[in-house]
Image (cartoon, rainbow, N blue to C red; front, side, top):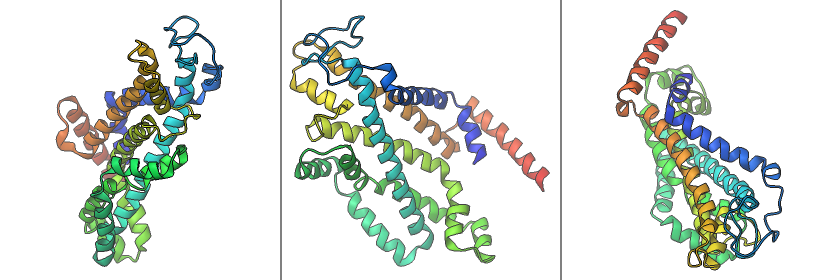
Length: 300
């Protein structure tokens, strides 16, 4: 596990992705300091272009786009990260249990996973949201989470099935270790790179799905998020009247989050698949492998 983290920190893409995501998270955390203006307050003329006073211009209602962008990052990132973690946790647990125990347990969980997997997510999200009417961030999070876990569960299940008959798992089973300890202490650490991929991919999907629902009008219009900013910009015909800044700010925020997480996802994929490494990355991997091998030999 430490070996994987060492490789992660040596990847320039991972560092760049972490910087982007951390900067956006810090912006959301310090929103009251960075944007003391109330995002719902009218502070200027309708669709005023970016100026020194209003960095990102104003909306049709005269609200400061910069304040809305900074404050909107809070619910957008919170829902994205919380939903992504919940999706990953649920999929990982189901995949571990199904892959390790096999038999009827695997057959039952695999049937449920396949049933949810074949349902198109975005149309189902729109259908559920339409029945619920206007939904808040928590409702959106639950709708996304309960319909998006099967992909991670399938990946975790296949890797667990490949690991459950390995020597270290068999040895742990022979000395009488309980199943829960074998799953979470022996098998789970070997799945860390895969779990990292699932977390990053789930967060990206959750943010896009949340934005899609809010852009279509299923979010709470009184709650400032990047999705509701796009929804309000569309209703005010921002593009038609040339107020490009009204749409560019939330779109840039979503794009930056996606870019940062995509860089992290690519790095996790390299760690999980050594065959994809080449050039300097391969050299670093081999050098760290030899170092780790010497440390293990010295410990013996």
